[in-house]
Image 1 (cartoon, rainbow, N blue to C red):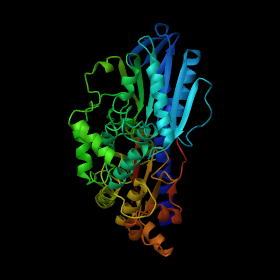
Image 2 (cartoon, one colour):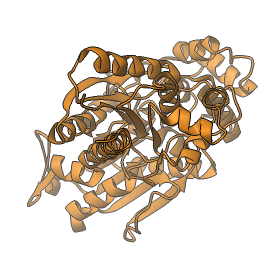
Image 3 (spheres, rainbow, N blue to C red):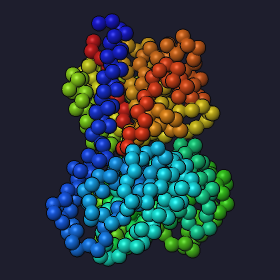
Image 4 (cartoon, rainbow, N blue to C red):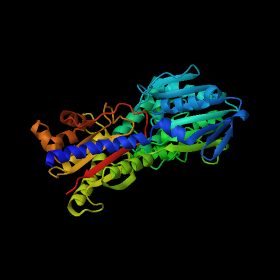
Length: 450
């Protein structure tokens, strides 16, 4: 087989493996796997809920996967569903739900006016619930921006500015949400506070490394271990205390001095009737990728589902592993497939376009220049990588050379954070459109047979 045909086969396999990962975390299927109805009994994991005991049954759906999760619950509950609120990203509605729903499409990754409307709608329905009512909360990634209700004394523009500054500084999702939870009314257990004393069952599609319930969508129904002090330290760590809007700094200072109550903590009575179930995660997607790789004849290896850090630094590690496999057949023999999951970050210094997955693949392509039989692909499982229409990108050892022949300087594009234009010119962007799911990023490294 020629070198070109071998590379084409590897590229096709990489795309197929990523497709299998996406299929494993379909939100509707995940709901159906974990929630069943037997007559008037609702079975969720090992818990049983007698629907005859509840006066009203509400559904609150928030996140990029809100629509498919909400639709699955609507079908499951049938006439037993009384009312619902759905808040999702623009373009993520596959079809209309029935008249029982209030639907809000809002901004992401930076919240907009509809994010406030969505948060208020969620809180209003939750607040209507009493001790005889059941709330099913369908939660997925993106909820932090999609539902935003600034704390008293703060404006939407204040929160938009903070979000933008932290994203550009390369803050991790844990750091970003530690700040957001202390500037917002429904984050960090705030929605559970509105819902108390109703019974709340939260079904979670996790997009956070380690599946931390307090971080996913900023944990609206989960106890918050972070504090005002933590939020202050994050801003200080990135040198942003003097750059955030003055009302934000004054609000955090008030919290530090006890003039504003903390977010609800573990052990708070509002969580006595709150239950959480993770129904899909990055780990499940990674497992499906490994199974598909094995089916295609590769020796599969899971690197980690806890991958974090600067995208271009992670890329150098991935490239080093590729070279080791190509040279020594370690840590897994050729043909090899290494899968990883998690969420990297990008410190934006240039004015180009791209996302963390595209930047990772570009940096890996530079490091693997001239190495044959190696393909790297990485994508966001939501189908959106940064402020672009691509989910990610794919590259091999010849990508940099092919770009050079087109007049493109790979290193210049990396310095400018302009991976999108680089891969668009090569035809190597991965475009899926909104997938309806969101469980972090999935990456694949293939090293072909000798």
